Length: 90
Image 1 (spheres, rainbow, N blue to C red):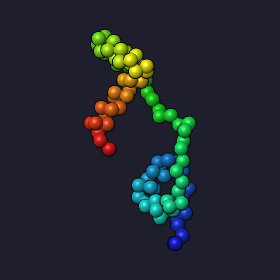
Image 2: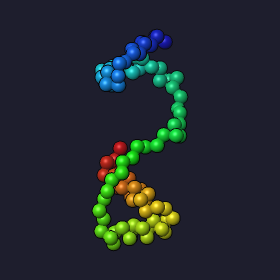
Image 3: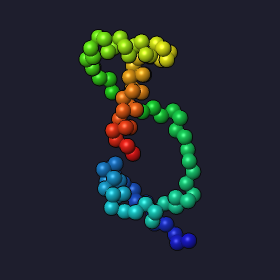
Image 4: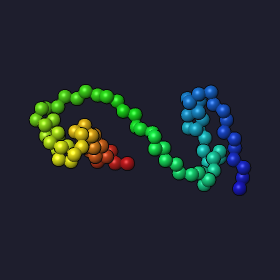
């Protein structure tokens, strides 16, 4: 197997991003030796937003959440995630 090229040192993330945009990683990394890892302590970054909903809609959402024994904001995130995956299939 041919020897892999050495990955250069980068001054910053922008420089590294530009490098990988222009180069094939298989010339530098033997992906066959890669191992799957779980980064269990990572949490997706979130952003707090304010949303105005009709009171009846909010009450219905809370009712559904109560039936499922989950917080209504979690249920709302689940509903949004499901709809987004329908609209933007991967």
